[in-house]
Length: 307
Image (tube, rainbow, N blue to C red):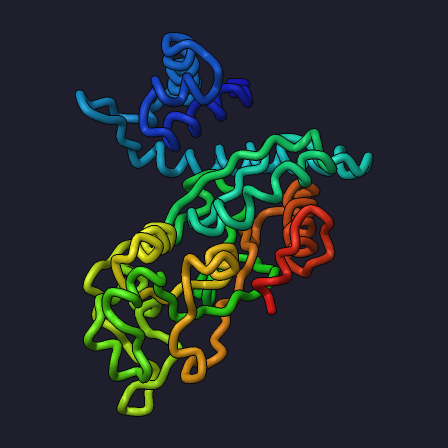
């Protein structure tokens, strides 16, 4: 039978990207070459792995079963390569990193140049998703997650924490007044999240003595969108320090109700699959990020928002 690694990679690429055309672009092949490779694999297995419809490709039952084995074989080969590279202490190859867009923009991006100078053979692929993703399905090596972790199938490494504050622009406060106590917030336009709902619980006690759960006048799945709305004077927002450090330093956003605000900090973790050998690429990136957030790295004083 002699199935090749190229055939396995073509098959998983088609599954992950959803089409032969997208898989061909990802693999750097022509559409016809990718289609032929997939055809050879199905011929060798004497079965249909993907059912082709006019709109999309769907895995057959046999395809689902074979996909697990294909991923395991590819991962095994990659791990073998990693072990050889680790012997030379030279992290190399593609590293796929996922983080919510605010963390990607305000924390990861400013660190990329320094990381690449130290580890030039690592090819970074940076992706942003506002919600929780399946690392295996998205072919992600390491994800940065903010808040309490729930997925027990993941390894995690704490890399820091960030305080949350209630903020508004000076323009908004000049136009609508400054709240003096928690009850005053009911008279204002509040900016909140569509999900998760826990982000709409602010670090200030309501009249019932419990942390205040707000009803947003404007909501978004993206913290960066809410930040931009707050900067534009659309309302009051509660955001993490890592994305508002510069805004507060320049006075574009002002903390309100500071005396009444509890010291609530969002934990930040790097996560990866338990059944994945920790590659030198992942180790190098997570260690570099942790070092930077601890204020020890010369390229950025990230410790300011860690305090």
